[in-house]
Length: 324
Image (tube, rainbow, N blue to C red; front, side, top):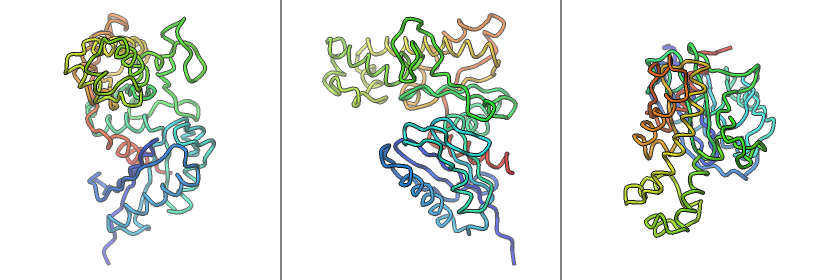
């Protein structure tokens, strides 16, 4: 009787969606399962979705549960990478959830849990736009600003917890208070939420007529694609707001370049996907200004290339590389 090929599962738990993918040993996609999530549905509901998503891709791939060799999970928030506990994930309302233990009890295979941005950066470093690099920095401006780094094939982490909280580096000493409680974090000036708030003010003042007509001043409606369209349709103030955000991103990236000397800086997330050239060009310009001269020409800022697959691929590959 032929031995059944091994299957590796990657799962990305987002604040609004969950994506599970089954891969063969060469990371070819065997099956995928996507579902929507709600931030307020509670721990048990999300864990139920986790179990169903994994079961769905196993079934759709035609594999048996016994053939699942590893399961890797990317999750928002602070993660204990040693034991797979999600310490805190505001987006899904989790606090000290033993996720790896929950999944391992049902599938009896090695399970790893990492921060979702770490998963995305690792995915891009192994399969995407940074696969030619040894040291990689990832910065993902979204509702907040996620950060991650891979050095010599390993995700940078703290003693046990995920690290690289780039969005909470202080860059405006007398700035506004961030959601984390500190003053002047990068997230307060360069996240999508901060950009949308500035854009809404510009629309209210009559400085962005296209945006005012098509999205009004409701921040929830001012998404990445709308901002890109506003620029395309002549709202020059929106372009200036984006460039100012890139200047702030470049500031923090240049500082981190001084610390870890990456060959590639990956920019990802919906904002970058909507305006890749604008973000890459201006972030590169300002990052080069904020690192020491000897490092100015040693790194390249690139837009992420894998989209939603970065997180699931990265989570799956991390699990394979760290089987215990």
